[in-house]
Length: 90
Image 1 (cartoon, rainbow, N blue to C red):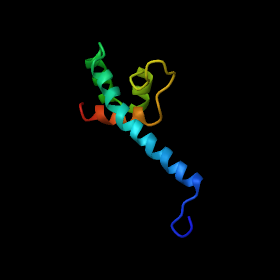
Image 2: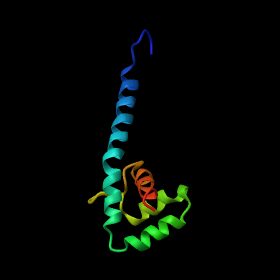
Image 3: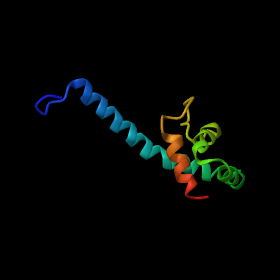
Image 4: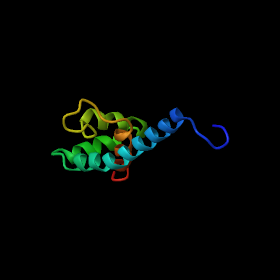
């Protein structure tokens, strides 16, 4: 940065960071909704409640609730944000 100017690379990095944050904001509630509409929601909520908060992200990822149809894995940060939403429900 010089004189208020930002390099193209830095601007692109900031834009990508903001975009990723917006993706998480949109997909995390969808993940939580998928979790809450799963056939075993009571069992899963009980299990989630027993898990340390720092391990809940992994539980959500393994359950597949953060993974979009047609994808092999969840977008970065979605499972963590989803687990935070679900943590408020337990």
